[in-house]
Image (cartoon, rainbow, N blue to C red; front, top):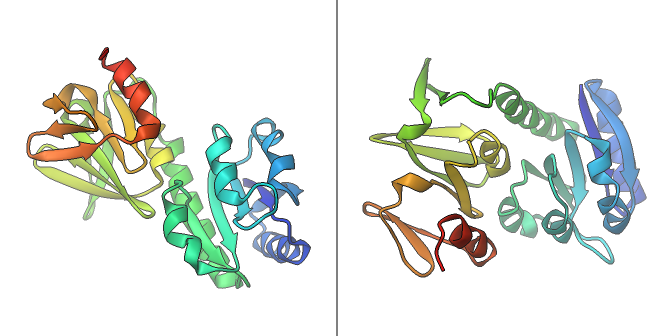
Length: 229
């Protein structure tokens, strides 16, 4: 059963989500907050699987909450405006629901959450490989074969030698599955394998003909990791 939290300053919106949760039967509502400021100090203590998060809130909006909180679970954005959708996916959200929320769309979102959660649960730290589904088979790919991972909306593409695998997942979920001593996130949209780097420029790294940007928020950690002064 999924453990969920609601963060939304709109009481009617919280009530609508709670009704969907109760109707589903496979989600337990742990807590609800009417303020992101109140939630940020409590959220890591709850060990929940999912947060339903409003975008437009006073004091701190939903995207600011994501940026400031640590080790967040999967997030489903809820908003009365669709204009934030593209920006929200840059924050590793699992899905984006536009108010008023209808139940069939809610269920579709929950199925996506479950798919990603099952992928993370199957992770076995210490192994030297992963299996990726391709057509009707699961293909073994050693970590040493992977060059980089690229995100696009709620999908990621894993590039390994001469093949690639498209996976329904957030970058956050994918990042948890790769050994941190071998892979590093250098951009909201990219995770790289460190020993595959051909060269490092001021704000980018090169993998053969592929050039990948290093964003400002990840640059200091990357430079430190690579022992660059």
